[in-house]
Image 1 (spheres, rainbow, N blue to C red):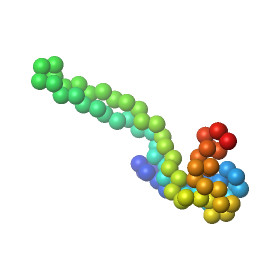
Image 2: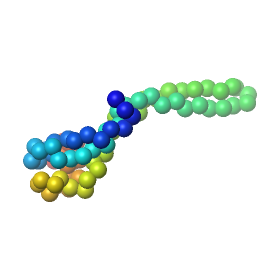
Image 3: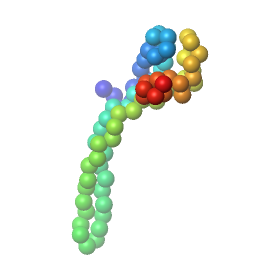
Amino acid sequence: MLPYQKLMYPCPFCDKETILVMYRPSYKAARSSRSAVAGGKTTWRRVAEGITILPEKCSNCGKTAKQIERKWEGKD
């Protein structure tokens, strides 16, 4: 899978594939520290996957991106 992909997701309200999202899979990122006395040290951390909604609202039902994100998170 490419680092970033544009995918069509179904709207949680109308169940039509009208939501264009930017999907970022999880990955490991390196962080380096440089010290003259102790030497360099590299630590790794896991970055979680993320989804960003590109349009401002669903073209079918008219729900806003904020409402769609809240529904996906289970807060609505």
